[in-house]
Length: 138
Image (tube, rainbow, N blue to C red; front, side, top):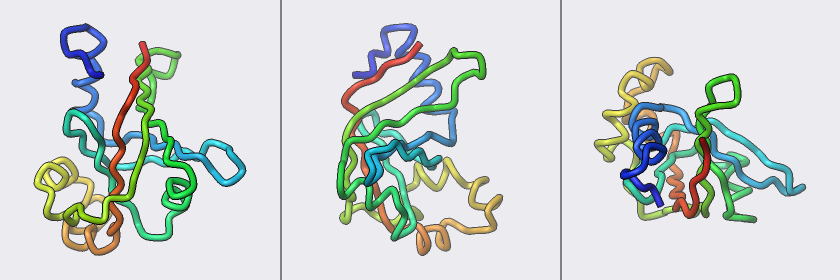
């Protein structure tokens, strides 16, 4: 899906590495899109996201696993990156503080929100995996 041999694919890979926030768009009960900014790690095939229990996005995923993820654009209609796929709750995922790539990526973020990796893992206990099926943008 992500072709690193293309200019667009290489640019997306760079953004996946650089960006700290991605927008997870789930489908609400009334079928309206429900965007939520989330922290993530990408393993080359899927996203790993952690959520607080009871969050609306979790109810939305339980009803309809189809989701989209996208980065902010450049403010004038360019630098668009949109993934679509399916989300699932992963009850076998380790807690966030045991995922080294997640802890390394968000070390400054934990400090900014006055948490440690351990306190974050105690609050954000639900792991969401999104398998990206399609990628589009420019």
